[in-house]
Length: 370
Image 1 (cartoon, rainbow, N blue to C red):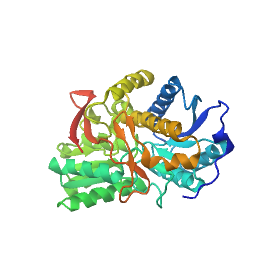
Image 2 (cartoon, rainbow, N blue to C red):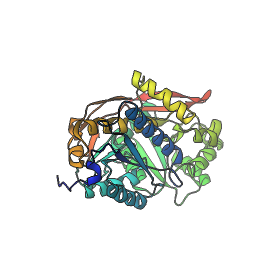
Image 3 (cartoon, rainbow, N blue to C red):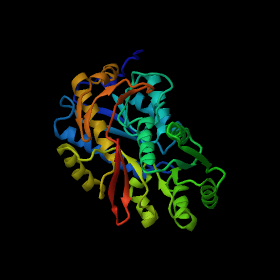
Image 4 (cartoon, rainbow, N blue to C red):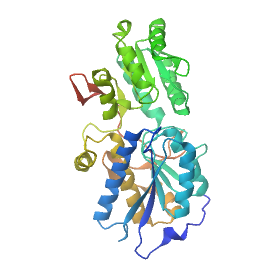
């Protein structure tokens, strides 16, 4: 591992704070609600660390930068945070943005613990500097494909926008389904409007439509169009990327937004730690915390453990990934080298397929676990 010298700011022992850079989407076109939950988890984790004495008696400080779902903005933020002397980076929700941040962190020799992004190829080459909590897309989306096949759906349509993330998801679904006799038809949302999507679903005799598209648009308009087309009364709408997890989805769609299965990274039952954190995050957010908020909290739990045990030197932080063993809100977190994954990976966080209950839209039903 090439080891650039750590900036002097990261080596201070005069009681000044230990700083972590946090990358979070807080403005459009970023998914602001996801960013708010991620930041709430990060901030609560920092508060608990400081209430327990900080890092070797020094307070832990979060230096937040808004990525706004912009890869170039994220890369620039990584440069800025590196110059400020942060000991490590944390966060990011959007996979394409996290990929840009990870590449820059790798080039600079800055440890990056990615909270939420799932794209398998988070970096182009294997790196010692980056670790990830969220499951790789190939793992989670294969579980989603298993759910679809188990529910009797083998003719799948995907309403997809141009993106490395959506293209990767389409390829994973196609490979999983084809191996068991299923088919995937891609509907290009760069060319089709929601009404045309409905016509294509009828023409292709699809039994399920997956939303591989941004929220709120065009995802909300597609759902409304499909829900109110009598020809498609029996079709399943799915959203593997997790759009229905957030209250904004329920507010935008009401009853139309229920019974749309999505991936959620939570266990069937939270540990006592997870239950305690859930209560604190609910109070902080004013609503039930999403799995993204737990990812934020767990990110800080891991970094605090590493910084407390191995110090703030960046090379030592990155070198500690394979020795991590931390009780998080969703299980014991340890990193390993996983085939096909270029970063240190927690393999695996719990994975569920859930939906909003039509009888009680604020309640989630667990449909499948992986």
